[in-house]
Amino acid sequence: MNHPEEPAEAEPLSDLKKGQNTSRGIYAIAGGVMLFAFGALVAGVIHSHGEQADTSKSAPADGKIAFTPPPESKIPDGPGGDSIRHGMAIFRNTGTEAAQYVGNGLTCSNCHLDAGRKPLSAPMWSAWVSYPQYRSKNKKMNSMEDRLNGCFSYSMNGQGSPSGGPPPKGDPIYTDLEAYFHWLATGAATGAKLEGAGFLKLKKTPLGYDRLRGQVVYQQHCAECHADDGQGRTDLNSRSIFPPLWGPHSYNWGAGMTQVNNAAGFIKVNMPLGAGNTLTDQQAWDVAAWIDSQERPKDPRQKGSVADNAKAFHNKEQSFYGKTVDGHLLGTGTPPAH
Ligand code: HEC
Ligand code: HEC
Image 1 (cartoon, rainbow, N blue to C red):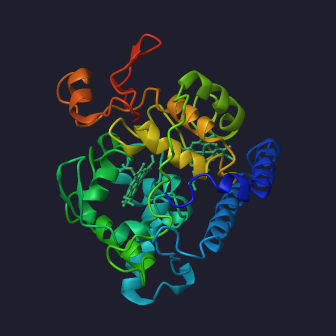
Image 2: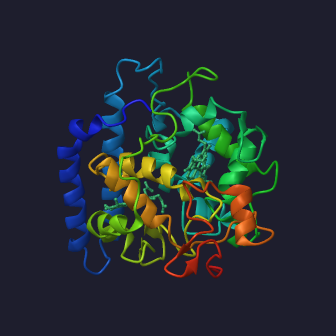
């Protein structure tokens, strides 16, 4: 997209240091008493990274327009501001603020970092000005509400939630999320191509991706936070500190993140947390293949066999859905988390 490779030189040293500090921090935490402080540290890392990204976007690259969303302190008072604030709370704490409709251990901002502000983690300010939009995923013009319905169905695994699905049409959850996005996009023109929109489209590498090479990258750069088994880590109150990457508490087989190219673009810029753009492109592709070749909750669109569903909905080149890995047919799903 706008800065594909270049940050590999520009940012990494300071970022890497932060990453190392972060991992040292993890080992320093013995009993879990300091988990609260640690959460604040993680937030700080994300925040400072976001700021770096902001200052780097001075001149519009390839016709794209630089944009910075307003600071939280500018949210207006009164009932309008309350709706914006509630939308932000849903985005950050989806499992508590929209508990009826969340069937996993994720929040929106686990993938759209810094509460939907961070460039190249599909920030909500650029999303807002690009809807309604035609999507080949469901072959229709999608309103923002349709889009969010999909996020709850797939990324948040709505089928495993107490209600068994996403919020119904017209639910105030959608209105408050939209109020928040609309406010984040204050001053951006409708349809504008904004710098930092979406996720990085990572270029293919000559070697292609390989899940076993990815396993090595995973052990070295990811497992300290997301755990060897990819299930992430929770605090003493079972609140997620490091989100699960696969298994029953993660995104399901219908989610955009199950496409290796999407995961690779996300990982290259945003992971390891606080050390974005330190992996090579090859490492990002390989580790994306490792996490996306693990079992997770089933695709809620599946009616017939996994093979039929693979044909109907899954991109053969970019998804492991319907493939057999280590003797297991991927797509059969994990047992319900509740
Ligand atoms: C220092 C700890 C840390 C390291 C190391 C780390 N992550 Fe993460 N990761 C996080 C946190 C925290 C989040 C959620 C970010 C948020 O909520 O702001 C996250 C989010 C994610 C997500 C999106 C949410 C999900 O559960 O699917 C993916 C995918 C991911 N990380 C992959 C990786 C990969 C691959 C690596 C190794 C290259 C890695 N991470 C290294 C802490 C880490
Ligand atoms: C597991 C990671 C993950 C989680 C959790 C997640 N998303 Fe996403 N989201 C993605 C990916 C990947 C894309 C882009 C690929 C695609 O089209 O699916 C995306 C795209 C979007 C878009 C469109 C962005 C654009 O620029 O067009 C919106 C809006 C969005 N998500 C909102 C949300 C909301 C709201 C939540 C929480 C209810 C959420 N997402 C949870 C991964 C995630």
